[in-house]
Image 1: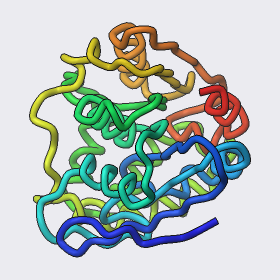
Image 2: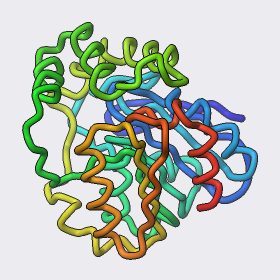
Image 3: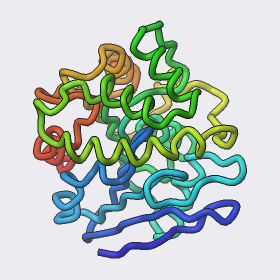
Length: 257
């Protein structure tokens, strides 16, 4: 196992962990999270693959942005830093959106794609009161309110399912820096990925928990139907924090890729 701080644009550094040997797989976490999301999955993958995970810019142990940047550019920097020509990408939520956008931008660098509880650029979200409250907490840069909304909406199984203490710790710590880190700095892809799903030409698996927010289920079906040859896996007993709720089941899915 090696821990490195990968250099990115404008003097930034991404906390990165690499372990194992074999075909490379890169794990991308979501918003108000960091690479601890993959604690239950990473060892199993590293036993048979070269597993790489990192904290996105401004989250976890990575440095905050000081100028406009793109998440896809940071992912490219990680691949280049480790000399990885092609990797399997696994992304959850925002990380899934980044993985999908990256695949469309750099198809030659991707060997397979696993979209876990993924969001997708260009998807038109209907209005939900709970999501409106979440967005308001995010815009207000209120860490306590944002953490509460994150847990209520996206960790809806609460302490009834495994992994809750780890989820609470990770969310609480990242809510302190999330809104400030992203505000005014993130460059988003101009075109929505949902309009170009037919261009994804790598083996793709779409994974969603049966207790995730209903709109994530809508997106999962849209991705599975729109990406040629994609397979949909619905995991029982999981909300949006699927890797910490059902790590064994997700590991089983991933090692098949």
